[in-house]
Image 1 (cartoon, one colour):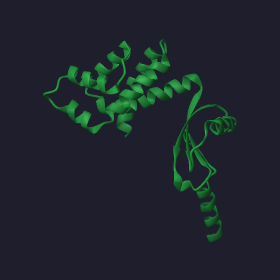
Image 2 (cartoon, rainbow, N blue to C red):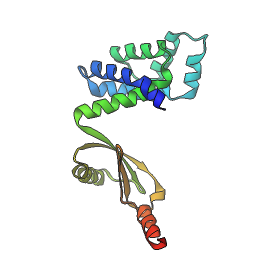
Image 3 (cartoon, rainbow, N blue to C red):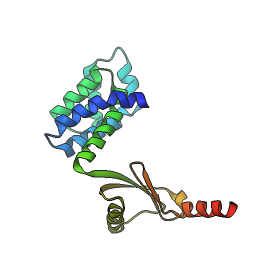
Image 4 (cartoon, rainbow, N blue to C red):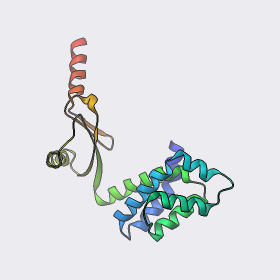
Length: 177
């Protein structure tokens, strides 16, 4: 994994330098779609076939992303394919996303909830979390019924766990100690 991160870093930094002078949000959306496509094992197998040309791989990826790619994104994708770095594309996009977030002062927040959260409730939760973590958050909610109740929030390497499952685990440790 560290090898992919090492390969991805210069690509992500160069990509960020180019994208920051343009529409960063549009670049982010298109790159996320390409990363999703590049994560498919069948596509990577197709791309690694020596009989398949780089332009064919580019056309398949462009079509699979279901977007009209910006010229800069097209150039980036062509370079990645030509250099045989398609397997590192998801890592490149992740690092690009982190650089874009850092530049805008926003952090990603993964919220795990036992039950669906209504939009109004989510806005309140995000506002509370922004105060708690001291920065603007971009929240993504994922259902995890095993939590029983409450939420678990992951922001970078910080975790805030207020779930019933975590409370029961703490009680179990306290009672068995």
